[in-house]
Amino acid sequence: MPTPARTSVDEIVAAGRSILETDGLDGLTMARVADMVGVRAPSLYKRVRSRGDLIRLLANDAGGELGAALDDAATSGDPGSDLRAIAVAFRGWALGHPQAFALLFGRLAEGARIDPEVAVRSSETLLRTAAAMAGPDHALEAARTVVAWATGFVSMELAGAFQLGGDVDQAFAYGIDHLTRSIDSAAG
Amino acid sequence: MPTPARTSVDEIVAAGRSILETDGLDGLTMARVADMVGVRAPSLYKRVRSRGDLIRLLANDAGGELGAALDDAATSGDPGSDLRAIAVAFRGWALGHPQAFALLFGRLAEGARIDPEVAVRSSETLLRTAAAMAGPDHALEAARTVVAWATGFVSMELAGAFQLGGDVDQAFAYGIDHLTRSIDSAAG
DNA sequence: ACCTGAACACCGTTCAAGT
DNA sequence: ACCTGAACACCGTTCAAGT
Image 1 (cartoon, rainbow over the protein chains, first blue to last red):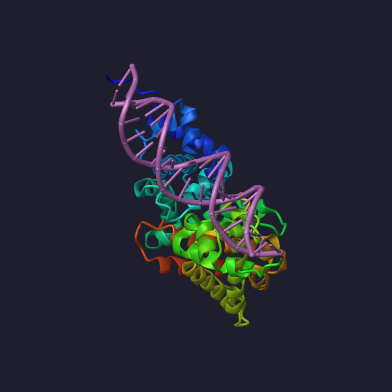
Image 2 (cartoon, rainbow over the protein chains, first blue to last red):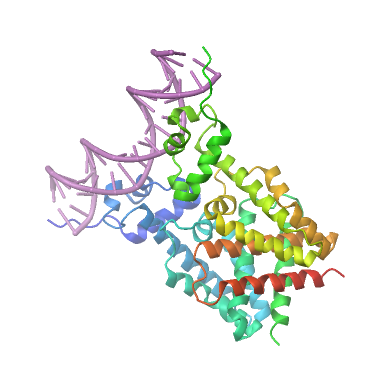
């Protein structure tokens, strides 16, 4: 006899995101997720293939969220202002979701990576902005330079790797200033 | 009656580094390490406090190695050339030791982080070079910009995050060219 | 159809007992 | 002193049995 479902993939993903931010990836156990959605651990396997698969779903969810935040930030119409706004939004989202950020940018070869389409969609706004500044021939290189810098900066900030004192906000401003100027001057 | 030691911390760290690169962090089990150095897992606890402690030792070992590679690269005497050489050496080491690199730059808040002194020592050469280019007032910001960019670039490269085609080597060259020029022009 | 308890394999860690 | 087997707690996963 059919039994009504007591949870859903969406609910599981939401619970996973919550546990991830609270207790980190190590704290994300199947039992904990199951408990949060009101079932027993084995029931989760009706909805997700494995813990790794669940982590992939979390990465996709976070990637979409980050992409939307960047889209919302780039509204000024001026490429230079947009690029700065995107960088600031990127850092803001990352500092607000450190564990999800680590999932997106700190892992490799774990089989739990974000789906390519989600990644591509998340980077569209930045690519468009970079193209407007650096010109179509160098849009990809320019975008990669900015993303690489922003990713690395926030990764190090979150990891507490800026240990030599100094003002981290100021270093971020220095970076975006110089990158913007450098990419912009390369347009002509 | 005293028994002679059958292994050492150095041997354990060497085994750990080897297993880490071969099978990743998940493959780094205490049993595997113990097997490789010729003892049983419980004996490892005579030398390391925990698996997390072992990972910290691996991170320190890798950090020292990376720092030495950067030192060896910066020998031209010209700050611009040195900066480029450091970036190339950084990427080369990372691509050759992807798992160790992930340990150094991809983790956060795992309690298994590299010791501050090792981190500081590893970044000295870059700081000196950045100071020579950007001037003492902006050495720290300039160095942070370059490290952030290089870290992010290699992280994304290793994660397979550059999925839009294009030449990754070319993007790396674009980045170091623009960063070098931008930081250098900021000196005067 | 979905849910569950029981069971299995695996892993980090502790500890009493050996030498 | 150092090493080990045995044991414990914990976790991901499977599966037969329930509804």
